[in-house]
Image 1 (cartoon, chains in turn green, cyan):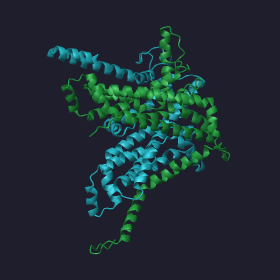
Image 2 (cartoon, each protein chain N blue to C red):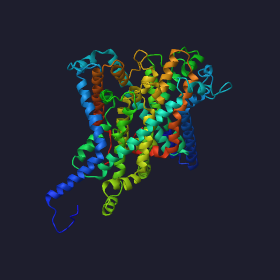
Image 3 (cartoon, helix red, strand yellow):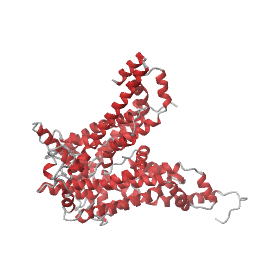
Length: 309
Length: 298
């Protein structure tokens, strides 16, 4: 350190030593993250992969059974309904949610007074997202007794409450998901603000009507953001847990109609302590999410427009 | 419809008429937006209103506003309904939230500083790994993490909920801070180095103070996520005196099923549970909106 003479050319070994000391400083900054990465992320992932090939009940030692857990998934009727419920929830809920987000963002963008007030009103439901309080609220709105059921009774429609009816229970959870369109809406709003105004002026000169301007300018320019929101929301809603748990009282009922994948994983892993089986489920979930995300990425080059600057 | 109206007015070419059309369009738009906003907020308004009503009137009318015979009885009954005052659950939640915020601020800013402002071997690889964990579903980790914390005798303490934050597992926030730190001018580093500042002082004295907006965003979202979290406390906490607000509300629902249904109390406590988040939202609305717009967190 003391030797700062500039006349001496820097020897190669000195360079590497300085390099090493700066590496050391960097790893000191990274130490907490690296510890977490090794012990709370990569380590558990490997452990989970191993456990998925074992029969493991938490209190006994893991016992290697090969692919049996994975094969069992195919025959497990509850598992199959959990997959069906989750796919419906994700593939209906997310597109509808994004459609609302985009629609409201465009209306808000086209100029209204008190934008901040509207934005706040539409965003507030997203804040409470998966909170227990909102899930409880949903029980009281759509359950039995519940507001919707009583309202329908008033007009002499004999309803048993949407949450107690297996054919409508999932729709109420999809409504809950769509209700939270505020956060993608804010992302759309920010993106809309970035679109240069002269694009529209040029279109107006060409005599383009509003709807066509939307179709040929706004939508293409927004596709990267739509893509971003789609990936993010898909990953998020595959992992939704609280609404399913609270609304069904932890059972996924009625008749497994609200049994989310994550809830079934919880029931198997922490209710019945079938931790090997739950680990296999977790890995299938990981691969499923990766496949869906990968699929969106693959299709993206056909519909996502990244300017040609 | 909007398009055809515009078309007609364009063909007609009458200025006054197109002006009037634009104005009525503006009014329609405002009305629609206001109606939409009311529909969005109606469930919440209904919940707040019902928390003051007598239980017999909650479901009989869609009118959210409490009438005669309303009062605070839901709040009084609900507060002690689990045998432990709700203050305890709020306290537990706030302790966990505070520690999680602290953990995220320290660990994420340290890691972000290294990624954004330092050169070291494996930097690209590690950064890629860090980004990769952003996409990782938590459910792949819960079983082995539970086994690990059980082995360390930490189940039934708040440690499994808090320790991960001190080890930077929320890579989203690392990413947020990296983006922010990268945007700070490089000349700062050079000036500081000439003054004999090492990386630690640079980090503490210069980079952190300049990163206040990113730190604030991290703190706010950590608060909201942690406060709303349900799965974590559900797995790790089983003693009612340790319950967070979410867990307490859940067991409130369960006790309601078994006998007397205290809907007023349930809705009253649910309403109370939302207040801290609403408070944060009102206080930090601008930062929140910017945070979502730039990073895409919910």
